[in-house]
Length: 265
View 1 (cartoon, rainbow, N blue to C red):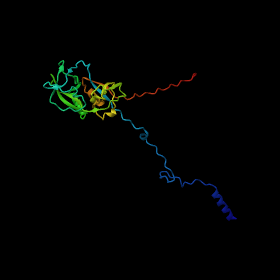
View 2: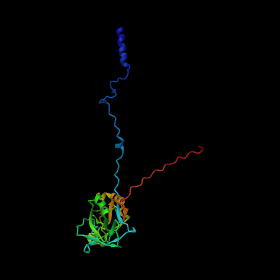
View 3: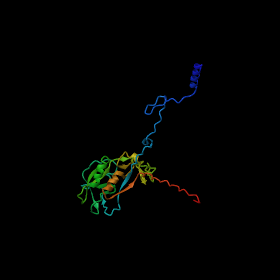
View 4: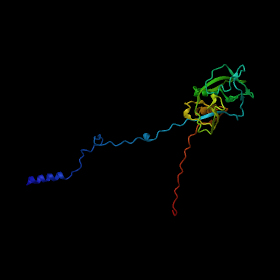
């Protein structure tokens, strides 16, 4: 009888569920078993954040400040013997210039020119040595500096030649553009711009140049924001800038809606 009672108790013990076994529970600090799936790791804040977009480059059209009270009229460059060059656009075509001996300029009325001037009908940039040093340091691969004698002046001046011609005008962003056609221009001018108003360029098509001329409209001398800031910091006289790239859109601060208090409070 005692044996039967013992067997009955054993059978009853097997049917009653006991406390949960800790065999399958990983210990603290122990590596999880193969049957335990790894929890997905949360990406760090730096990885979750969207990538930063690079700040768009800004460019400016460098003008002569015609309103400056001390401005002088400079002639087109000629040889020291007084011989005229083949074209007044010789230094503004956006290409390197072969040195053709010494050059000179006349000044009207007599006096020291500004640090930056556009000379003659060809609008040739003429700069003081201070300005030349800025371009020589910041854009050595984009410019050519040709010494030029200025009548009545002993200080050094240079003709600034932009040697890069880039097809970068953003026609959609300009206020107005018009092209030469085969009916009104020689073959080499067809496709060039007859008119450009509200000039805008595409910074992604500048090839990283810091100084350039725009293809089809080389009358514009374009400089980077870094060149502009350096000239302003140096206190250069005679310069005027007009931005030709779209400024970044201004951030709008969302207006918070005021919660009206219910009447009676």
